[in-house]
Image (cartoon, rainbow, N blue to C red; front, side, top):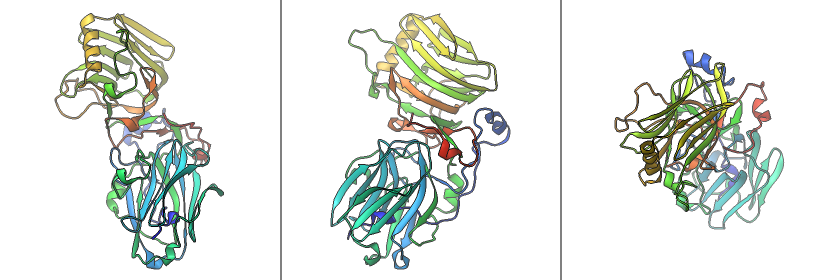
Length: 425
């Protein structure tokens, strides 16, 4: 039987509790940098899992009670690719709605057809968009903000007539292996849903209290970037990155650029090392300075600008002869010790080398000062060796991290709609 593309959208479940992202003294400190700390009331963050197709939440619908073929919800993201929701009515009867390069994509698989189609305007702009999916006869229609975006004919037939006991819906993930998709997709989606209505049903998430206890909040307003909440990290294998190999002329150096917005704290911004050894390079934010250490002998300390919140572009360059750090309008340089540079170069170009962002792995294998904490704040526009770094392509990424969004400045009730994100960092 053909799968109803329209039905796979959210169900009318109880609102999730509003959860602030900070507590106690940290909330007061963060308020200087992130004016929006409370969560968006009643919204569901579907960006709970990375590296697997595991859904953020699931629900089952009793098909004997379905009388409507339309489902609707509001969706917001700065993430250009990922699964919004998946639904099935049997092993070979399924539907996926997601984004690819910021545009809506539907994939339908059933005995009538298997088809993947994408189109319309980009939706990864940080605005709330009203989405409606409807199964009409043998057709499936997607509307966005009351305008038809995609329409497919002869791909399904009325869900109300289907002799199946239930439909399964999965938010932000899949209920089948990702390899079964018609067009492969990075399933992780840093996005939020709210004001959903699925068919005519009122049901509850299968995860129940566990979902409420572990749910990530949805920020009331967004700005582009990647938000690190003070727990978790992302790691990359330099050899897998663009520009991660030695240049043909043999002259190697390291360059990292990013924007940083964070309260005064002690936290690791980035490091280069190996999983079971010491660090060849570390960049640490301290309450009064940004400190970069290269190897055992080279250490550069750059005082922070005045004010409770650091909000500035940062550029780190390591050449065979010099270590340079630029933070906003201030910078500093130091001559390198050859052993320190050679250590970094060998680590970066070796297969065991790792680039750590926001923190270090748990355990005692990587020696580091105990006072270092995981970084808390927003990193935007991360560029390594001149190439944009995408946290969705990490070798490992903690589920605690918002890969494509940071809390924005409070602008009133419609802040989310007026946010000015122009794509993901």
